[in-house]
Length: 121
Image (cartoon, rainbow, N blue to C red; front, side):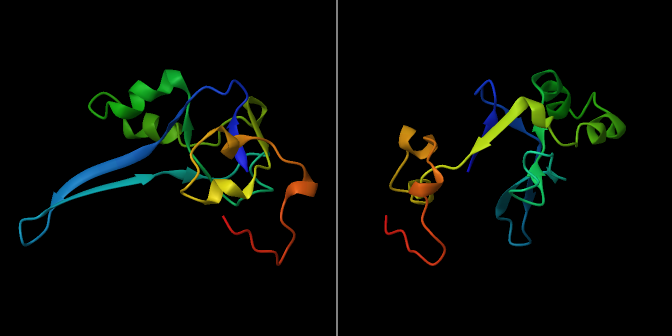
């Protein structure tokens, strides 16, 4: 599936990043994308979705020194489904060998592999 904004513009996920030191002194950088309940578009696809930030909320999310916990928590909600779209794409998207526009081209149900079929990419 290709799940995207109807505008096809890029967008930001809400995430957390941290650096900490292991007991042996080694540095560990960690990152996670925060998920929430799915909106109506994503619900048939998956039981959760990444938190997508509206452009006007990105700076608040990134500046923890001026954003209260209550305000940051209020941003952790499903993105409006009416601003998104999704459709089936080719199984080539599952292979790291492919990284081009063919990965997001829509395909019909007739082009999708059937249950039990292997797609050798």
